[in-house]
Image: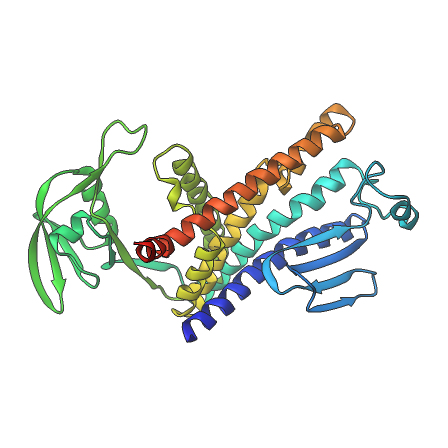
Length: 368
């Protein structure tokens, strides 16, 4: 019960902060471009809290922390609005009357704020804790992997492969990748004692690669370094944000290209599970996890899917090129297709989550 409460609280905090920052980007950009914001909502469902500020924005907090929205004044165009809505429009403060550049700025500000949040979180981590250091200590061993067959265990320290000493994780990875299928020995330290174990390096064949690469099937442990000077933390936070963005895109490409199975695609249930697991290891780990998710949220919203921010930006780019908006019928069909795609991905990722939790195996055992 304690673990479940921690998971729910961690998930609510993590997703709540990410969604709030995303919507705050839209809100501040709208105010900057002279557009009134009618509603700022975090969470879905009947509002638990609701109030209206002096600028006329209604703020809401809902019970389901799976998203949120900002509704600019006059977001619906003249072709969609009712007579009652048109009568309530305040001249000069409606979204649809603003130039296409202003509308694009309002839309892109949400993802931009997610990247800024990731940068700030990395900055805080590096200034307070330093860069994480990857040790040559084994954190996890994948079942049925080369390492598992060799008898390696979490907590072992890899000291060498064959006759080559490996003082750090990078040197282990360099040797393993270049020697797929090789039979050798791995020198380790376990509980203060050194020993050598025979191992046959596993191999995988990434799609499009000229030859297979080696793989042990382990994850190394990481440890925090020492706090950095603020000037160094500023630079390293930018590098970390960029590297995280590139790695996220690379991971997505590997799924799309078949290098990794689509079963690796997780949904909200897996994020909730990971939030709880990360939270038990301290605030620093939770902040690092939030930075990773914030980059993911920013990237996802920039994808050119009509119902997402990226899809709207595509329509605005076409409007700027054509000199007039994209026909409403085209936009409607695009939004319907985008909604169907996102709904399908949500169901698929949720199915993956439930499968990884063993729900379907459990139901099958009950049926048997």
